[in-house]
Image (cartoon, helix red, strand yellow):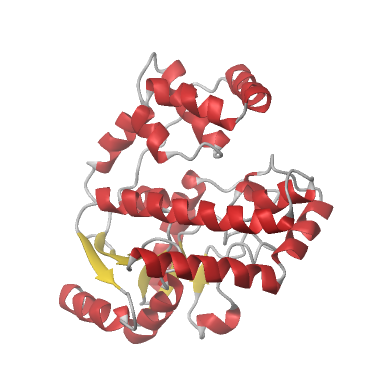
Length: 310
């Protein structure tokens, strides 16, 4: 029998975290964060990390669990989240995966195989140097030429993933990582899941994103990045490639002003939200919930979950 799993996903700023906490309180659940940034200790403001107070006593997994110098990736997430599911079930509770990183959620839900192809360090170094010399966009164009679907899914600034996709093609004799990922998505689900995606009116979402970014600056985002930089972190660290952090780093390095960084973060976050929606529209068996206005999604989710599990 497959273990039960509830998923609450959607673009940034749609209220996923608070919905997950409220649902957990109603159905005796615990939350597993599927966020690629909230795992890092000391990176609280830029990641919009849920606070202890906001958790309201609901146990959360994969929040504040590694240092920013460490690398967090989809394989680590899949493995740690699977362990968390077992622990939550051993306590007689229902696991609720909450976050906007669709690739992470997919990896857990379908237990995706990430068997490594032959690692080519010299190729990786060559591509890194190409990006430094010619820019991230030029490197991204290399990927677009051989694997347009991957290029569409991977942001040009995510240099590590771009290089990984290029390396996959090189070491497999021209196979596309997007085709591999599509095959993996056809695997049967590894859990008995109910999958919710929160969404809202585009204009309202963008207003919420802009307000959230302004709040991050008020709460001390610049100071947070200065502290991290003082600890030796640079944009070569995976943690510092996250939205908000890389822009402030570049502003501190004189590439542009702090106010220009604020606007860049807003713009990049809006683009990120669009990419998140594109991802979730490809997933199967989704219950979409429009949370525009004063809609409370928890009642809808509770009803669906009750019919499915309880």
